[in-house]
Image (cartoon, rainbow, N blue to C red; front, side, top):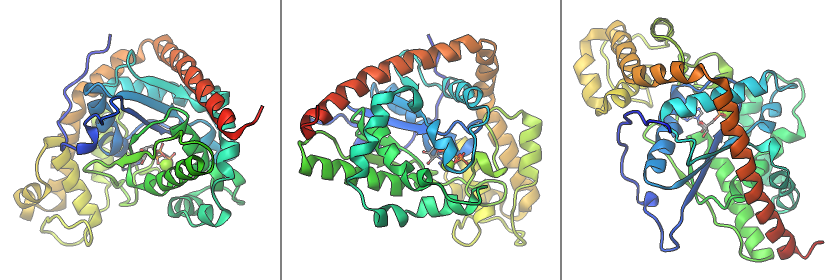
Length: 345
Ligand code: ATP
Ligand code: MG
């Protein structure tokens, strides 16, 4: 049903090869807090599409309960969820083969959170660096219990479907460690049931935004996949660089400049050092112009497809409806196994 646009091939990863056990299932997801941006695209979305092209089963969770970790209300959550589906399909996810679901619609998944909470300590949850960073950026006066425990909810997202591979950005690694710990402890304490999922990082595990901090939907520093070419140019013109006129690639000491160099390299499938050398004395103005052209050119087919798909909102809702039904069937099965393993009624 869906035609897959050209996706630049990424580096071969041995994890992608099917194991002796055969079937591989990946799960990954996003919060419905706004439209997807270049950080998602290069950080995880390209990998999701590529894995699916290799016939690995793709599950995508739209983490709607996770919206209320750092804000009081889940504003326009259904609309954001539909727009995430739109971005996925535009990027090449095949909805006929992927399961795209909202975790609030899958009760058995949520029930797994109870036994899982007992498998991790408060101290382990409190020292999670991603949660600490999100608290710093949160708009709330008080930190909610969900903020500390959502990584356990994420363990339920991953383990209900026994996913073994997770294409994510760098911020997710501490959460994944919590999932792995929960899986291990469950298997030791009860019956071996869960795999310990492994992260799959892309070449851009932490793409920066226009303020040189992590590009995020919620931080006003993102270039969205759906932005038009003029808006992309305007946002990139405002990106933070530095005073050194000569362009080089050194992410440690020159994060803003290097991020733009990386962006060009990712869009053009080139080595960032070669890109920096070519721009060299051209300075920040040429760097930003080149980045704008590279991004707009690379995203042109995706954006055209996105506009086409946006005309039919009922298709987006249908994808979620089907995905939720599939996810419920899987979650009911896993919860039954967990209850048997624990000896509950
Ligand atoms: P929010 O600000 O609402 O938290 P976000 O931009 O951080 O939004 P998420 O929905 O939290 O996006 O993250 C979804 C997935 O995208 C995760 O796997 C995350 O690691 C990845 N991701 C998000 N931002 C980036 C980025 N800047 N670079 C690479 N990967 C990213
Ligand atoms: Mg986030």
